[in-house]
Image 1 (tube, helix red, strand yellow):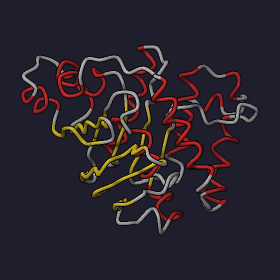
Image 2 (tube, rainbow, N blue to C red; image 1 turned 120 degrees about the vertical axis):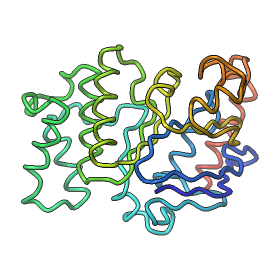
Image 3 (cartoon, rainbow, N blue to C red; image 1 turned 30 degrees about the vertical axis):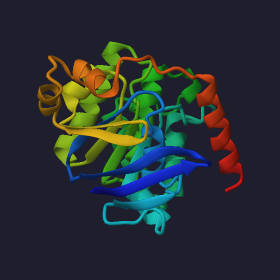
Image 4 (cartoon, rainbow, N blue to C red; image 1 turned 180 degrees about the horizontal axis):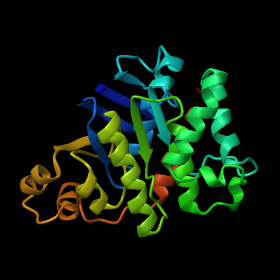
Length: 262
């Protein structure tokens, strides 16, 4: 479902993703973990056509996302780390726009939208403006929107960040159901190690742009001689706090300059 080989992304002199390789099969539920600045979001942006790799190979559902951008986009759904809904539109309108952009036949849209809004328990609020929604409701709507075009793989970049425990649990129930009933492949990032330990059947850890470890939660715990996944994660990536230092700020400026000059 997702094949990555020798993937590299550079921004000027800074290497954000450094020669990573892995394979994710159809129906897998995978946590893509790493500290701040490890290269997770940059990697996901390459998987989802938002950034071009400097070198290496990506194959998503048998498609090269660099060469066949639109076909690749039809194969995946994504829930971004930052909110991406239009607050001045209703829940229904937000999904309907997505359906138009993905060229879903007009006759199929109403039934599909109703099905998805019922799935995330928002059908009764379909005509309400999104700006009146809570954070959890917005996340559920973003999941519904990401599924409108029936993708084969779903990417979730810290989907439960900032949500209360009750809403997080409901979110994961929806996602597990999709994975179980539709064999949808799920790849997610999170800083909540308990989420990764509970839901992921495979974990890929990256740090400083490199793949550090890969395996099931139990395999990683055993390999790190740890008692929990969080302890194993810290053993693999270190205990130092990752801060936005002056050198990191310089690297960010280099990234922006490189992007503008692309």
